[in-house]
Every structure is written in C-alpha cells, then in structure tokens.
Length: 238
Image (cartoon, rainbow, N blue to C red; front, top):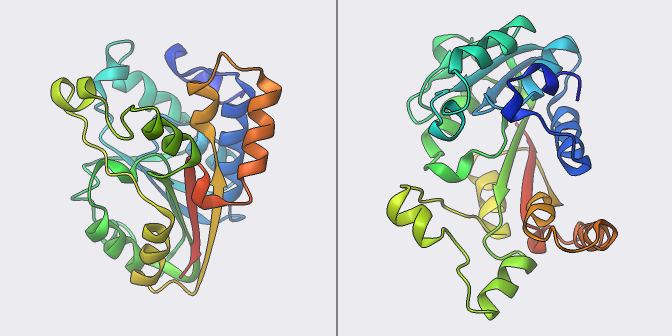
C-alpha cells in the first residue's frame, strides 16, 4: 500500500482485495536476491515492491494505455517506478526478446499478470523460457472464460466475453482461457512442475451491491476448484 501510494493518484487503491492481489503477486514472484522479468506490469506496484525486497527487476511494458494517460503522464509513472531501482523496457511484448539483455538460463522468475489475454503469447513465452533458469518460476495469470460467474451470465442471456462497446468501438478483443488451456500451456512449455491457483478478483468489482462477507464466502468456496474461478494462475517451474 505504501508503494502504491507513491504512484500517480489514479492508480491508488486501498480496497482489501486489491491489496490481497498485490501481496499474492509479490509472494508468487519473489526469489531472495533473484532476477525477475515482469511482463506488462507497468501500472502495478509489484515490480517496485520486489525491487525494494532486493530483487533485480526488469519491467517490460509499452506504457501507452490511453485509459491511464488521459489522467497522468507516462513519464510520471516511470519516474516513480525507476526510483525503486526497477529497470524499465518500453516495448511491445509481441516483439520483446529478453535474450537481448539477459544470458541464457539467468533469470529466476518470469511473471505475467493481467496481460496474457490481449495477444497470442506463444513466441514471447518461447523466448522467455530460454533465459529462465532450470527450476526457475513462470507465473501467468489467465482470465477464465467458463468461471461460475461467467456461466451464470450466459444463462441470463448476457455476454461472456467483450461487450459490444469494447469490441466494436474501443478495439478490445481479449482471448479468455479455460483450465485445460492453462494446463496445455504448461505442457507446451515443458515445465517440470505445474500448479494451478484459483482466485476471483473481478467478483468484488462486478457484485459490489452484495455484502462484502457474502463475496468473500463465495470467493473462498470457489478457490478449491480453479476451473470455476474467474482467474486461474499457472505456477510453473522450468
């Protein structure tokens, strides 16, 4: 929370679930004195927190979101993140090649939170696996197309994917995943270990009219079945 409040004000947040999400991402990516590549994490405090904890952090992002930069300048955000010792690479993830800056098998963790559904990540992950150490961590957050909440939306006759406004006017076309997709990604990358973790961060945003206690109860009940959660994390080791 302390680090987030150093970011531009539109990125401030003190909702318990957002803090919990930040803490989970830190825990998943952290390796003492390790080296991290954070893919697409430019708007999150995670990279700064991990750098503060002693990791060597490189964050790769375009820093070009019109949603945010109508409210503050990209340089304002970059200055804050760099002040914590984070190395920033302004690049399109579809073209980014970590081998241009890292030796083969030299990175402890590659993380990709809230980004993978915007593009086909196959070539990016292929390139990242080359610089990841044997036993190194690959952490990927995927949005579940068939979570329990999205199944209910379909039964109610509502869209399960991008809204008409998002797709037709705003240019958003996201590729949601299912549990078997996430497992297939682990097999394709030949990970030595694969674990799935389920969470329901968007549940708190889409059902704000319900009591917080009821949302927490539903979230905790679903976590034991990642295939029904809104968010599925692939936690793998090379």
